[in-house]
Image (cartoon, rainbow, N blue to C red; front, side, top):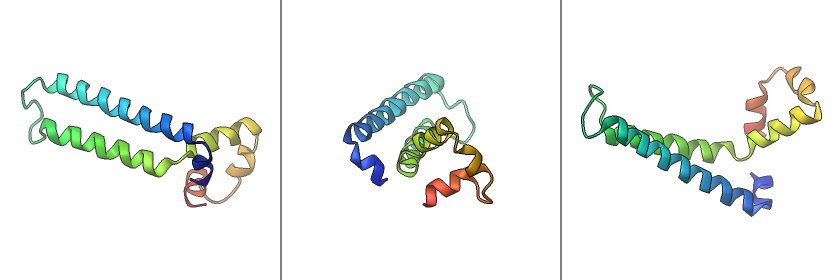
Length: 95
């Protein structure tokens, strides 16, 4: 998270991408439902709320983990990470 705060443009673009992503999914699900309740027991509002919460949680929890893992792969350090007894995803989240 500290590394991400160094580059404010990265934060702004990530937030913009999240907003665009949520907007696209909103209109996709709005078109799928088309005013009808096609899924038994799940309303359009519930689907849209789920998408918004899931995407925002992903944005909050990822904080540059994807770019960090990409850097490790490019540098060739992935071999070192894969030999550790903890999954690479967990080590990047909790460190």
